[in-house]
Image (cartoon, rainbow, N blue to C red; front, side, top):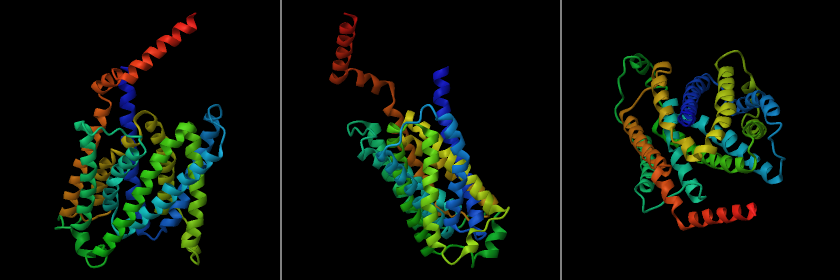
Length: 359
């Protein structure tokens, strides 16, 4: 029973992350539509995350926090640059050109990039003689193909009752042009590559710095510093961009900072230790579904047939990857590993060592 609950907690945790990301997409898009600078949003997001997570890290990690080394510090610098700074600036800028639904759907290529990076770095097993390994490879290609389909093919609009009046009112002024959509897709795609690299590097860093709360606080702090440098350059001559009031802009910064940076970095670090970096990214389609539904109701975003088809292809590809990933942990795989020559040698060595120690 305990083992079943332990496995269930990991799935519930990763599902919680997707609900958090879905809420962020809706709230952030609303704030961006009302004039908030995406570069300033990134800075405030991680400043708030640092203030919230740092006290917990100081208290709960005081006995397990390892010494900071130059290698670990350099990794944290790159972690702060990859996702908090580069990815989020590109993601929010791409969202400005498109919609919350489109941005969330494009992020479904994240598992594909994460899988390829993990494969190249030998963090993910790929045995080309096994069916489940081919499922992971083919699923990766299908995922990328679905993202391209969603980007290049628009199709007819879905005339939904709750968006009908909104569409007729703004059809000539608010819909993104094809060029803007393509530009947004490229920015989000590059951001996803950085996000994937961040997840892989986080998994690697946790092996030598196994203090999730402290690592999360340091990543957010570094993201705040690096993001501020970028925002100062991008918003030079526009001091009003830094103004925040009790409105949707402040809500976007607080929500995304606490839920999607502070808590998310910490939770995904815990999940990585058990399931690896690819598992963390495999549930992204859930966020897309949530954002599509909420974006249509809350933001009156238009849904196109081509994007629905592309999203469906992405979901199929991703769950091929997820199925293949699940077979890596199957009982038969574990049995095969035990009867390999290496396993036999390790068992004999252990027995010999125990005999020597007993003497």
